Length: 292
View 1 (cartoon, one colour):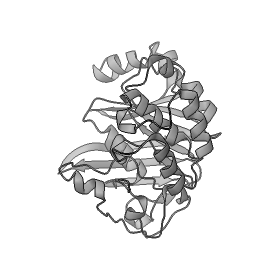
View 2 (spheres, helix red, strand yellow):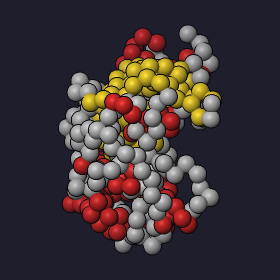
View 3 (cartoon, helix red, strand yellow):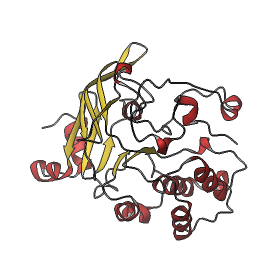
View 4 (cartoon, one colour):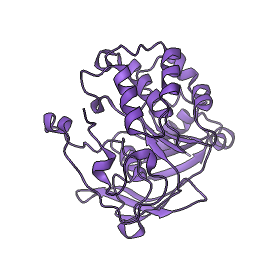
């Protein structure tokens, strides 16, 4: 069985995501069609956020090693088919932060995450990455229909040196998920919890999550900050794209808003204290409607 995205297929000289802790200068981007892709050839955009990449050399548009920040984007722009999507983005991502990423569909949230991972390269500007590990939440497409929860754990144990199967099994037991369950027969919320567990059972510094909690039950969402702080490595940072601003208000230390006017990074306390609004209120009133 083979994943839809194999890191070894994409970078010469690098084996698997958790081994990319430095900067493999001059690594070649390669793509090898997997069996899963063969059976789903009608699907486009197979470059989902499952790739871990921490820089491939200055000459290839943004692979500069930086120690002060986990990630820094300077004047980054990106378009598709001649249509600008992101313009002159400037972001600094520090260690030990919970960061929300919010914006309407089609404005560039996923594009921004793919730029952060290195799946896509910027048309302009630079992306600087610290010499740490970066991991992303998987999707259901990465697993074969026959796979059970235990097969996913074995797969991650085999391919990712930074993955702790002991930690994963402990979290699965706590969550009530059986290792005998077939992944494709789990509810959406159960799948999302499984994928989150597989992700945080890897030892990394930066975790990228694209709408990981849309189907998870309200109780778990309410306690998600405690869950992440308890189970993530000390000093780790999470960047989570989400529309659930009301439910996840207390999770985020800061926010990245992607709007038609541009990309803006703000402290959550600044939103509450300076503007006297919740994150959701600020987003809807100030960002969406342009009210100051």
